[in-house]
Amino acid sequence: MLTQTAVSQSFQSRPSFPFSVDVDWALPDRERDAGPAGIPMSFARNSEIYGEAEPAGLIYLVVAGVVRASKLLPDGRRQISAFHMAGDLFGFEPDEVRHFSAEAVVPTKLVAFKWQGLIAAGVRSGAFIRELLHVTMKGLRHTQEQLLLIGRKNALERVAAFLLEMGNRTGNRGVVELAMPRHDIADYLGLTLETVSRMFAELRSLGAIELDGARCVRVLDLEQLTALGS
Amino acid sequence: MLTQTAVSQSFQSRPSFPFSVDVDWALPDRERDAGPAGIPMSFARNSEIYGEAEPAGLIYLVVAGVVRASKLLPDGRRQISAFHMAGDLFGFEPDEVRHFSAEAVVPTKLVAFKWQGLIAAGVRSGAFIRELLHVTMKGLRHTQEQLLLIGRKNALERVAAFLLEMGNRTGNRGVVELAMPRHDIADYLGLTLETVSRMFAELRSLGAIELDGARCVRVLDLEQLTALGS
DNA sequence: CGGGATATTGACTCTTATCAATGCCCGTGG
DNA sequence: CCACGGGCATTGATAAGAGTCAATATCCCG
Image (tube, rainbow over all chains, first blue to last red):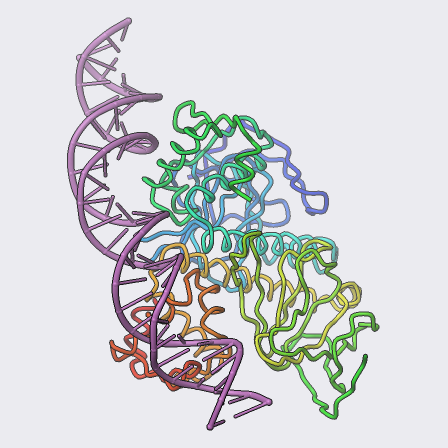
């Protein structure tokens, strides 16, 4: 199953990312060659990109859409460690096997690269592997900050911080469009969906935000939101 | 102030770490040259290795002792993101400035290396920068697992997991010597020190552990502890 | 042996989780 | 075009787990 679509797109993630992407989008097919040119893939809403314990041969660049990286406990408790958005690189692991799973939050377009191919290219170029190190260190720092958020902040502070993060990442601090449902936000913040909903209500009653449907947040008082979200 | 001690030691952290260390231990002195040979440093209990917002020019190899990496909120709430022990490399940051602070939990010996010097050497050797990438990815994975722990597990599970981690890292699963006080354990697990103390008591009453003073834990039922700590 | 830091234990409070009912939005099909 | 239905989201009532405050107890270290 390899349905080519008519969409063609050129994409460059970061200055030193070694390959540009200029491809026809195809449905996922993990068996194709993923050399330096990369494999384009499309994923439907809520479809799995990879699962825990799968072999970890590919890394991914998000072209469009949103991806959640998560880990499940046997009894179903879930923690989302990150949301990956356009321009983000994800899916690198220190071992041969995945320790997390990744799913598309909305219809998502990715380009996959073979890890080994990138490393081989990096041996020659040098710049790329340093870039990858830099991206990984930034991911580490973000996760450490998330640890502080979840370990030491209360529900209102966590939700405020989340809205600020999303506003910053989407580049629009005034109107934040949330791609993910309350349940995903809750699992990202270590809360329940009911508590997330109550905190949205509280932020609204404080005059910090306004809700336009569940997925669109208008920020009315950025000062106050920043004070809460540190 | 540069007091040389009589202690001399040879240390090799990992197969591909590019430099071996064979030095006389000195008190910290950040101004000395930190070329490939590295600067040995000693830190007293609870002394600061570096603080938030300091320039981030050095990375460190733990030779002996334990280091806590932590982040503070303005009101004093603290989250410890990691404990670093003998053989661990820490202190690499994506920016020029520290986003965390590091302190010695017990009297600690480190070797510091100039980041720039290592990168320059890595450009030639190649292997070192890949090793650094690998170490960073492992740190990322550990922090992501900590996120699941703090975001989704209860107090008893967190303390059980902590004891398992310490047992594994010190290489003795039967008797776990804890270098850090309850307060540090609490800040690592996103709990209060009282709750940590109560969970130790609960594990004791469940027959999973036995306490020999506050800092020494004898594991009586590894099965049960593993079941709790997942 | 004494004293200060660290740890334990207890009583009570408070935040957040849980369980349950209702409401809203949006796409679909009559 | 409107009614229906299903997935999400909100809101409410209550419970449970961890936090807070406070009073000992214990362990080191000099």
